[in-house]
Amino acid sequence: MRWFLFHTLIGSLILSLPVAAQTVQLDEFGMPTFQPEGAVVQDAAAGEAAGDPEADEVVEEEMTEEERAALREQAMKILEGYGSIKWGASRAEVEALLPDLHAVDNETPHREWLPRIVHYQSSGFAIIIERHFWFVDDQLWKMEHVLDKRVLNQVGMDHAREVLNRKYYDDEETAAALLEATVTVSMMPARENVVVIYKRAEIYDDAEHAALEVFNEKPANAAKELELERLL
Image (cartoon, rainbow, N blue to C red; front, side, top):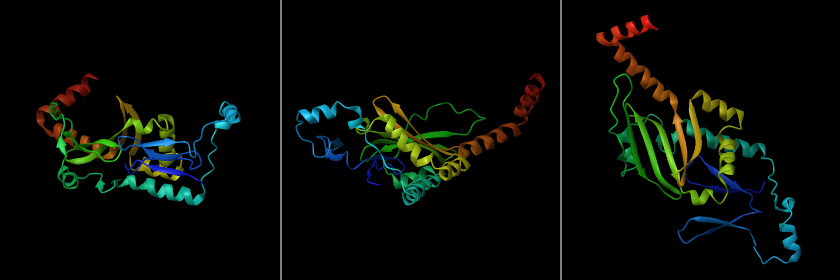
């Protein structure tokens, strides 16, 4: 199968386009742009063909078993984390990999019955504008990569979502593994850009459960819990 795999360099998202339909050039900002391969001035016949929807349609071939296996292997890496940044890592461990990591908006009052969450940010690379990290009780449980929307505009948001789903959710084995590990990968528009969101929910859930246990162990809070049970 002839595919052009455009790696966004965020490790877990691949935007794929058929080789026969696309070539890559760079714009004045050094960002990839996609142009029709062998573009020439259309003659009358070509103009008529361009007006035919069927002529514009690109048929993608089915993936082979080898290609599915390779994509599955790549997708499964998110179960451990994103590249060298692992789920459950401490802030200090992530900072050792990303020296420009800095705190963002951590002034939200902490509620005693909830785990403590802090939000950090680092600079991006390639088409990643920013990288964001959320730690719960000093364990990494959520990451967001803000992508330059100009790049995704070349292929379309819908197609980008299709590629994400094909990688992580269309394959039953991959989808089952992510579900068991409570890992989710999603994409959404954010102002002028696009955000890819990675979460491992069990890390937050375990921290939340532990915080609630500590809260309820305090006599005053235990009494409030009993009163609440009586009134419900």
